Length: 360
Image 1: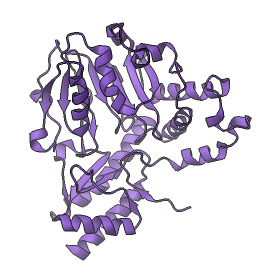
Image 2: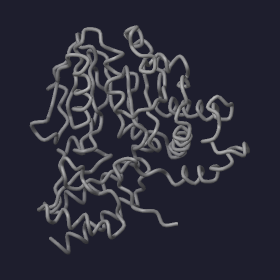
Image 3: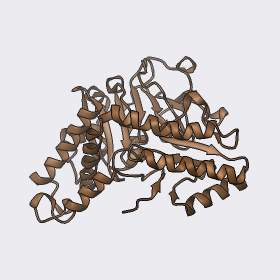
Image 4: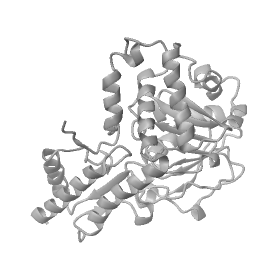
């Protein structure tokens, strides 16, 4: 079966193995004579999947016993208000701005608190991640919020072993499990699944239990992290099929070397595309500074907007899907999340070289 060269930014490519397993079990999951979508979320058959997915996440990310793994709904966007609703103490959280999604998180926090910006590269069109020496942060901050990878601008924090002076919170929606990192350095991590972990519908939250002590009594039940921790993410009906697919994708990750295997795979894919850009003599120009380049989203432009559009049209005709840059910045973007195979990146490299030879 021919598969598209899928560079969609999210929902994104899924491993063939995970999709094939889902296809085989779609109408008869483990001899239940039902789809997993038809099972009660209180049934033993479903709960085995639920717990297996959480156990695999803990293993693959090396999550310490001090942290809970929660399987929630509402995407990363619901986390933007949930975080200040649960964790404010003085009403002054700190948001490091590196792109549009960190701006959106800050916007929601402003409805509930008096956040400040402890670092930003907005005046540089978000071409780089700020150096830690540039950050203004303090032990008086309620928490410090970062976005580890910026899909729109193609930048990524290269070092996630941050030694923050206050609780550290990270939106890792677009690069979670793409490489090893020290989970213990973070008091809360959240990620929509639809880029590296599965289909849309489930949001992963990794929360240090000590943070629940901050949650005010008046916080609505469903918007409290301790509610979901106490009920094992089964307080209300979870997105069962999305969690089933999460389990399938995590199984594939484990079989392919875990976080270390994904890092090697992603380094190879990114090198293919960045080398093509760097060796094009300026025909292709990357948006991100070299020391901030994302290994998840490769953003670039051609010499003119007319050539950008010609490139995108010819790429689509050649079977390359999802190469349009985000509507807010334009240009081109190749999203190369975990499940995107090396061969797809190599095919794009060949197309880019042929296109330059034709139009350069």
